[in-house]
Length: 84
Image 1 (cartoon, rainbow, N blue to C red):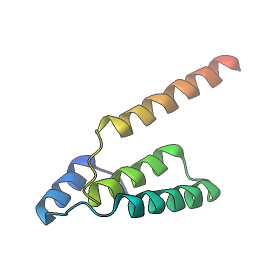
Image 2 (image 1 turned 45 degrees about the horizontal axis):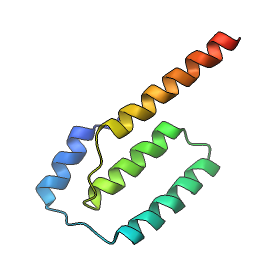
Image 3 (image 1 turned 135 degrees about the vertical axis):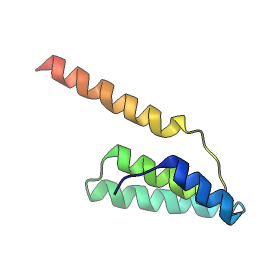
């Protein structure tokens, strides 16, 4: 299953979602992040889930959020390759 930010935004805008309690969303994000970390999920997968939940709650964060995670992972992998 691939993740498409554009489709996610389009669905949310079409449904006319309103912002929910930010405190409730923050607690949900913490719980899901901890659970996903314990399950061994990648940071990229966790970022995608966080981004989607924020969008569904009407909390708009920049698209660069996902891109920054991908760039950081790439840089980290390059450093590890160079150390070997």
